[in-house]
Image (tube, rainbow, N blue to C red; front, side, top):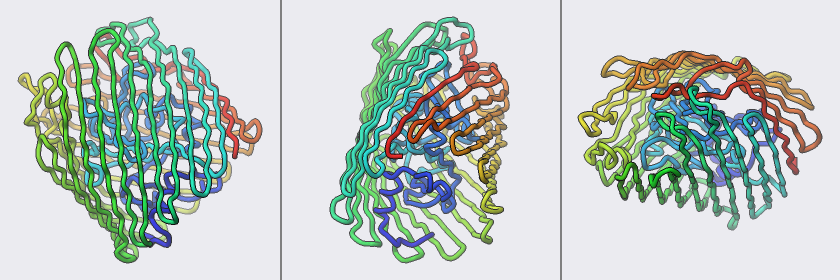
Length: 599
């Protein structure tokens, strides 16, 4: 690990605020999520995936889940048309075992289910950092399968104006505009994106299209104070309406609103000490149009982190996190209004001696319902030679029972947290400047899973996920290739069944060819069959999905993007219900014209 030649404050601001220029793409991506400190992907001891701005633009994805599904080990479940409920399963863990953040702020709701990935417009994103494996020692609840940190776009140097117009199948219309300015002392920006899709029938048994409308905003203003401090206020929100079909095919729709507002103050009193204070508020709300039912989360969080370089071998991070959450819900005439307080302290030491790197992390959490809980990580890396690195890690994680678990239908206020222990071995190998390989073996035991039994929720479930992941990347001249594969056994230890909606085998590949004026690419996903649910006998068949993408640089700052989704018009399902399989996008063509100044 490199010592701080400059303050950590400067590095962190550059990592989060500054977009990556074309000249930087030959360098290792810089991340902040794996250890809550700035490091390259190669320096991270945990398995990390970075989805950069170029990949986001080329994909023309409708939401974050569309980006994630083309990476092995990230299984997606979707209830039909765009905007419908979408679930993510990292390495076979549950859909609510993934912590999702916007610029380091947790957006998972305090009610049942995971973060609303279907409502996050990719055009507000600069990059996505995905860390696989337990991270509760650094981030707290939900980080059993991994962490996804969505870094929003910020101002480049000077004034930048951007606009884009997109259209395609199913009466898809997208529009966005943004204006930002970056100066030596201050920066500001505002971006708005509008998406309207008439959609397609949610279920294969239906002929009624179900649509989706989403208006997303990303705004920020920041100022440097003196030579060693920085203050920024940022806000993200998504508002819209999602039409869908109910469990038995009824026509329904709901309004949604998701937002995160953050005030961040960073200062570095000297070259060895950096301090970050973050005050945030998130809101997550859904209101049913056909009834008075609703669900809402409001959460205020104070997160204070201090990073101290003890000497050239030790970087110590210590902090506190105070969360005050209010959740309320009304469903079928009954509901709750619950306040949840969570206080935590964490400590991490990133130790480096020559070819050896060791990370030790621990967190103590005090929850006003289940009491106290401790989590930890121990990770080790050994640089065998200039090409090969060996990795090993053990970590624990937990998910606190949410308000619905405790006070909704079948609620049990005496629930304990779901808990896990993950063991991992890894290898990374750089054959040369063009080829790199990685291999990971993991075993994740999860206990105290919350299941409905005997009319109430109880900690009775157990799961074990064992697997092996492999990846290969190639970059030379005009070609770039990425191949990822996973073989895993997501097993319900109570009955030996395969965990629902999680594949045992999947492979993804991305191939691109770039010239000065254009780029063409192909994305491939192939996955094995999955059980739909523990409550039915439906099997979701294996499938192979191929997308084609193309970009043509019309002139400086002006480009045309095109995509053919589901090239071979494959029929498959990501989820099913009592009324049949949920439908997916058939073969479809999308276009986008994008103009950006200050290129």
